[in-house]
Every structure is written in C-alpha cells, then in structure tokens.
Length: 156
Image 1 (cartoon, rainbow, N blue to C red):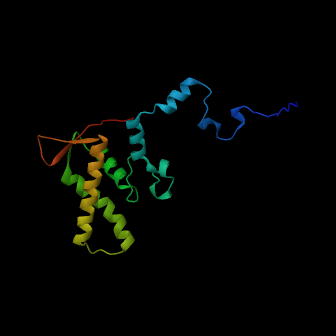
Image 2: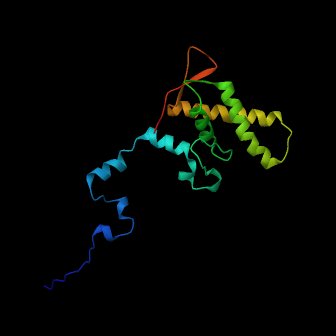
Image 3: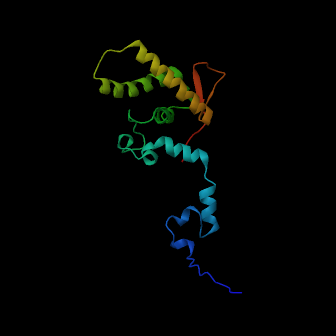
C-alpha cells in the first residue's frame, strides 16, 4: 500500500489581506470593536454624516454647521442640539423648513411656495421626529403638548 503526503503551505493570518476583520492580536482591541457604545456612535453619525456616507455634499467645516444637503435626520439632530431641555415643535418645524426649503428652491429655481410642497415637508418632519423619538433622543412631555423633551445632553 502506497501512502502519499500532501504538503500544504499555511501562512499566518496576519499576512492575509483584511485579516483584521477576522483576527485580533489582543483581547482589549476585540472588546473595543465588538462592544461599541450605540448612543455615541449614533451621535457621531448624525453629527457628521460625511464621515460615514463619504459624499461631498454633506461635508462640514465646523461641528455646528447645518447644510441643506445633509440627511433630514442629521438636520433635525443638529437643530435638536441647538435647543434647550424642551423643544417647541413649531419652532423646530420652521427651522427645518427654512433649511430644507433653501436647498429645494435652489434645485427648482422657483420662488413660488406651493401647499403640496409644504405638506410634504410637514410629513418628512413628522417622520424624522418619530425616528428621533424611537432612537431615544427625544420624548413627549405631559407639561406642554406642543413640546418634546431632550433625553440626551452631550453625547461626546
């Protein structure tokens, strides 16, 4: 009976491309990567969407800058950071409309304000507010019906 041997050349994982996706050199790095803090990550993502989306339209020069081309969630989050403990929903809506409508007017090149566009902005605002509430950044108040309360202060 003839026995054949197969020689396999195995190299260490650190010589493979993208090895850090599957292997860690020390345990503390693994814990850091696997146990991220969701609230801080969400705050960073909403504050600077350019870092995650890698698009030129969302690029900001200062941390408090709000651009109309940012995602609506980021716009509302930035406005949320500029307010106090209670946020008046009407003032928040007007601030949102003033930022978003400037970008839409620049796109359409029209100065006529239509009611359909206004209703569309109201719906988009309400959807984004409900998403912020679901994420835990705001909650409704029983003291004032037209206000919401901030639940986060200084994520960083």
